[in-house]
Length: 253
Image (cartoon, rainbow, N blue to C red; front, side):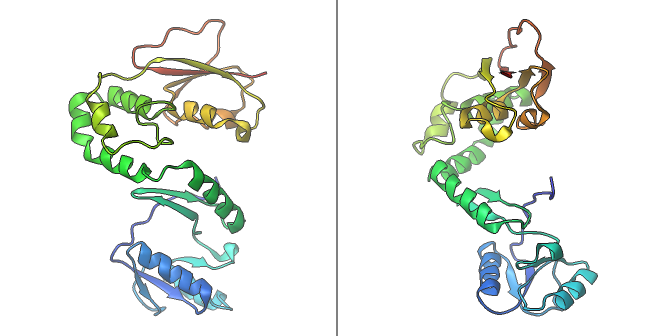
């Protein structure tokens, strides 16, 4: 990765925005939208700053000398951080960034995601947050609870995030039969390029507890799985999964 993605809480905090014109105004709106307090004073106490001046180097240098993280509009080489293209669904916030290489590409990807993510996705997230206590009560063991939630949120599951659900979807799910899904799903790669993964394949990888794979499957493909997923080289036989365990088998052509 070229950058470490972070979500920085700025509610009630001062953020310096220097400059005039559309670019500076856009940054001021962004800060205010996130709950921050905009200051035009370069000497204000702050942790973050945006510079949209025609000659940004002097201001950026002074701000950085004070330990402030700086974003310089259209000058990625001067930026300590960049601003991604944002997609909002209530508490769900999806950020698409290119490290300042191409804001246009980030925007195009965000627009594509807009068509994929249902309008009620934020409501689903809120309902899951409110159900935390009930989730712990129903599945006291953290691993079992995670598998149950992964199964519910998987493709075709009762809480599939890419499908519109009624407002009481989480309540209905919690009222069903407890336990996580188990089973083996297998697919063959079209190529070694992770961009060629289908949406279904990518989602299966993200939800898998165990990833079994041919030795020739590239690391870039395996990295699309969860960081805590168990990886195993594929032997002649695939063992039966433990109860509540999701296994994905990847074969290369």
